[in-house]
Length: 155
Image (tube, rainbow, N blue to C red; front, side):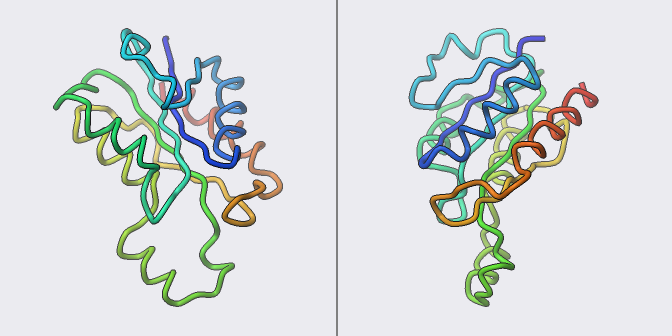
């Protein structure tokens, strides 16, 4: 099965998760800015990863999703993840309220992939960073490897 992980990363945290996933799944990985259209040809499993920025996927991931044709992911199994800060550790009622309204990147990406025909095979996942620029919280790379096992089991 040909699998591809497309991602964006600002401070390297999302990229570290992608590297762990790519190794565990045997997937090709490509940063969104380096993606060429021919890399999507023949993909049977597509994983999309982004940091959560302003409650959304990165601008380049959002642009990619908008640029894809309706039903462009039909027949493709999809999964999504994001990197984020644990809102409950910030202790901000305002931020908690905003997250309830706008959510996170992984859920948004999953909905857009499904709307364009993709088949979501596992629930959207997230990996935590200690601060807006990271680093990843302890144990997150191991969680990425475990999530990869869930993806493999769902195929």
